[in-house]
Image (cartoon, rainbow, N blue to C red; front, side):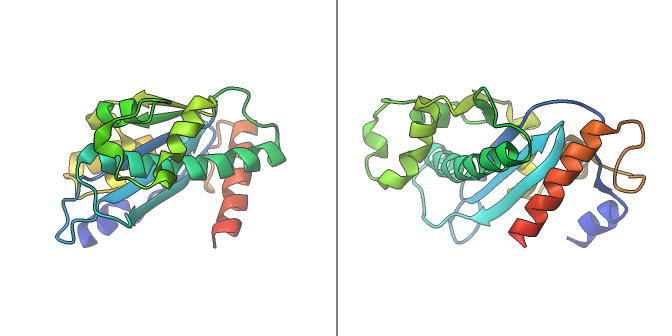
Length: 202
């Protein structure tokens, strides 16, 4: 923990370099902890920079990594719905399904609408919320290779080079007043959204 803090104490979230719509990552660690509860992580980016993120212990013990990933995707989709409403209030609601990236192809298949499987029947109905989001085209759940899934940094201990890689993906860098000077409008839009979310979360 202290090594991580030492390596990142002079970094800050920076905004304004790119122009992209809302995109999310979801992940779970597969119950590697002693208490056997998987750790879920998600992060959402606007214009390529992080605006919302979370890391927390799941409330139940799942029987496979795919199940843990499905539970993580469910919690992520709830945050996605809230973010879409917030963005709609600030500017305009997303016109297309928001891309949600996951590194577990079995979990993606299980989240598809009407893809019933006997191995999932013991999972409470609330965890099928992600299926409903996919069915109504509010979420486009897509595969992302494990080495590129940014939320790895929120679910497990990683080697230094991976922490550096994912920190760059979250747009953690050396700021100039918290915002990159080279861009204006995109930086202002993303920074405003982040300030509003910070006030609502805390």
